[in-house]
Image (cartoon, rainbow, N blue to C red; front, side, top):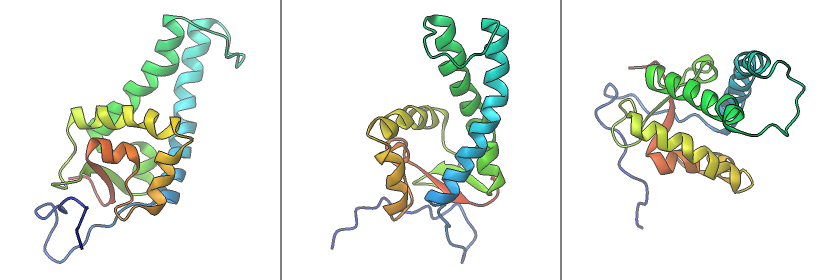
Amino acid sequence: MIDLDPPRPADARPPGSAIVYVGFWIRLWASAVDSLLMMLVVVPVGWFVFGTFDGALDRTGALDFVTSTVLPAMIVLVFWIRTQGTPGKALFHARIVDARTGQPAGTAQLFVRYLGYYVSAIALGLGFLWIAVDARKQGWHDKMAGTIVIRGAAS
């Protein structure tokens, strides 16, 4: 039988300890927490920038793109780079690491991971559902970036 999984991190944990991958449901709850927290930032910015926030989806232009796409991406990436996760992931003691080494993922990896969210979502969310069936609990975005989400304190 051919092993298709990449090598597991060997030097990133004490002898005798095992990697605990964070699965679909915990990651879904963490995402819900993060979405609520993101609204606490994005909605007030929308009020400030547009003078109102009526939930209308017909806004277009550079300013809308910055407030609705770039700002959330920057917030998420800053959290991922500095803390190996988001507040939602921290709540569940989960962190994003390099799949080969178990060390913190690099900035370029995390950027690819974020772009991979769009790939995972565009395919009817199958890239996120893949977490539920994958042996290492990787979504398509994790596979694209070479990351895993594990339980444990940040290194």
